[in-house]
Length: 295
Image (cartoon, rainbow, N blue to C red):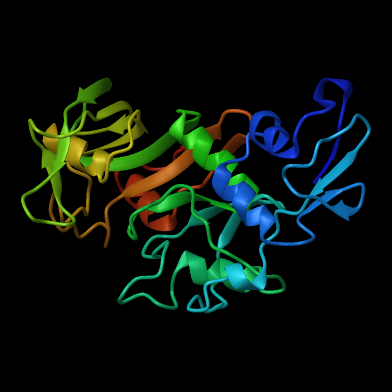
């Protein structure tokens, strides 16, 4: 990335420019300092204590290097649905039953493996900004360099991410509602959560799209971001997600929880939409016939 130093930045120390003008984290600045070609002023390697002058051309290289790459992440040719990609970030409509990250029983079937294969022509580091449970489908955002990892994580922390899910739940729901109930881990479990008095505040809003006595299709808006928040909250109000065996029960209609991250709007970045997977479409058609796209 190239920056031309203007009169307001004249005589700024380079480190101050990186932190106060560009907003780079100390971690990212430290990483840039590792490489002789990552910080150039007028084409020459520069130390962060250098004083900048009006008209100087500052070039920063945020690309990943071979020593950044996880040697245990194997590139695997797995089909994935790319919603958007550029040099800075990639947005994927993750299919159901695909893990986002590698784990003990999932070394070669994850979104990380698939993207490592897609970008195999260059050193690639997998950086997921948001996370979805393996059996939740929909939008996953990944950063393609350290700069955008910082930018996107900061936006997430500051409430600039606006998420929307589509869920198919048991029973007939109200037209809309808000669930404000604290969520905590259950005992020594590393997975299961519940609404408990000692939990962290969690807020979920929902709006019913389609409804009958047996099931409802709802848009869900998590205002906070607790683990399993939507699944726990919908079960808490008596409308567990169809197929959610952890917080509800097994279903003949679907082999996983019927939950899909359908829309993500990021302030200053853009808005992305992910179409529903076939397993959820089939349930909706079974109960409500033909319908217009819900995404």
